[in-house]
Image 1 (tube, each protein chain N blue to C red):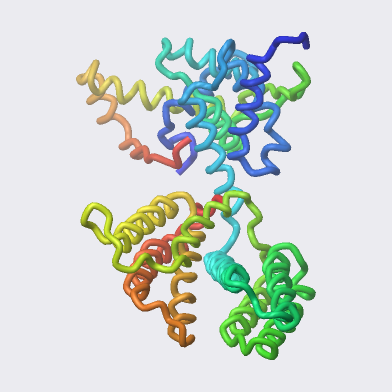
Image 2: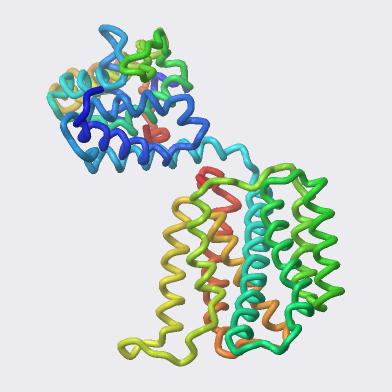
Amino acid sequence: MSKSQVAMREPTYFVLASLLDRPLHGYAIIKHAEELSGGRVRLATGTLYTALDRLTGEGYVTVIREEVVNGRTRRTYALTGAGATAVRAEAERMAAAARVVTDPAASARSAAGSPAAPRARRVRPA
Amino acid sequence: MTAGESGPTGLERRCRWLLRAYPAAYRAEHGDELLGTMLEAAPDRAWPAWREMRSVIRGGLRARSAQNQRLPARANVRLAVMLALATFLALMVATYFRQFFVLMSFGMPPGWENGLLPIWILGVVTLVVVILAWFARRAIAAPVMLVTGAAWLVLERGVILTAALTCLAVISVLGQERMPRSWLWWAAVPPAWLLAVPRLGHAHLAGISVNLLVAVAFVLCTLAWVVVDARPAFALAVLAGIIEVAVLASSYGRVGSYKASTIYLAAGITAALPLLLRTRRRTVL
């Protein structure tokens, strides 16, 4: 099973989504994720870096710049090709799941026309 | 920076202190970056928000766990047993020293210090040996342990100390891993002290036996600890076992302590051993 078919936790999803337009540093990711989610996802610092460490390890996110701001290192993170594919696949999966409720007829048609989608499984918490 | 900016400086100090939840190597690499983000997330505050603190502590424990995941279960067992033996030795020496102070408070016969000086020195050497178990190379530490054990046997007929030092020497040469050096291990001191103090006998508090209260508190602490890292809890269970053996082996058995220690022993081993053997993730210290 490819990684793109694995269900993501919401913070992970919004970290990746916030990097879709442009690379960002830590606090900017927190702010952008909050904007994108309409204020619902407010990442705490520890949660963000746990997610970033994991996503960097999986090759979804990479550090593209290191600079010193106020005497402290600041890293800018960018989405990799694999990361962009993963977040888009997750968006598709959630959209398909949403259609089951919002448009049951179309959902049933597409399910009949295509082989059964692999069931998403939960992975390590981010 | 201008004078009078005590607010941000205080916040920074508190954030830095919180970041100690992360292992030193991780802090060296990412500490500044996390600090910068924490400060940006908490402008004009004296303390970081509660959810920030929780996330940093959880992230730190997770980073420690990730760092320790390579240790196999047998290494964790070995380290836990070494910790138990080292704590036992430190407790024994502390007991010796306490006896000296009790004797001195009653007034000693003249010339007493000549007879006891070698024991004092040996006690200090034993404490140094316990520290060597953590910091020295095995090739140096193990022979020193054996020699010290032999000295106890000759000088004091200290069979228990000799046995403990010999076991520590043997176990320390069985594996490659170094003892964990995290300051969080100091959290083991209060429960170890609970194990070592003479029982309060038949004292009661609000109608409940003090022994029972201590036992319940100990079991609760152990269970809480197992969630974070199974090794200290297992080490304490082993320590309880060693104390039981030592009590049975010596003539000055503390009557009344047997039952309470057995509860610690059973609870500790039952709670900690399965986690210790199965879950490598639960080793954050």
